[in-house]
Length: 295
Image 1 (cartoon, rainbow, N blue to C red):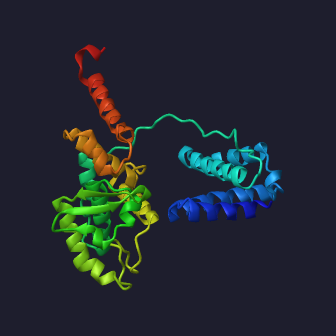
Image 2: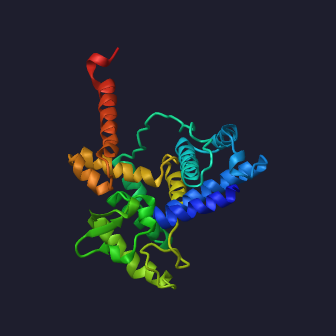
Image 3: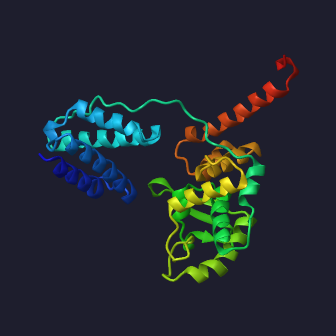
């Protein structure tokens, strides 16, 4: 059986039967496209011709350009594809011993409150600046994932009740309160900039000057440039603001379960990583200031 035929069968299955989300299907298709291209370059076109060595060669090449998380995602996609081909198409499974790259748990990037204030302060009165600050205020103020921010629709924002209805991973919905700064910015942005740019009658809250939905890449690029201009760490990402949202809530005494619900974590173990940040800060303060720790 041709590899391309097996992949087409697999994509149909995860779409129609397994009912994966469109984003998940597109992600799997993208990873499999890279895989298929690499196998074809090795002269491999049939499923039964794929060997563990051929897969490992592809993974080794991928490791040179991908982060650990991206590499593990690619490995997972390949394993799932071969498991399907083995079970449903009676193909051999050369990926059965393929293992994810192990790496230690990294504490999330964190901004202190002063850096957040600097980042969210408007630097000028331009329309683009209003859009950018509104985006960053939403991510930090509501703890949004960057994809959740991009996909935010007008009907998900209730300014009167100061509530945002967010659709997260696996289409799980949650409600997040909004602060006065967010409400003020949204009202100003919606009443002026967005009204001017909305030439397509978009359903999305955040649009660019051409009336199109804001992209993830726009937010990443904008934040990188903003950090550089303000003298902040350029490694700060939109997710750093989400991490800071959680950390600042816990610093203020919020219950871990409340933070879990606000972040949309299905497992509280995911939320507990933020308690490790607090532990590290305590240790650092102890090492720096306790007299018995000084030489």
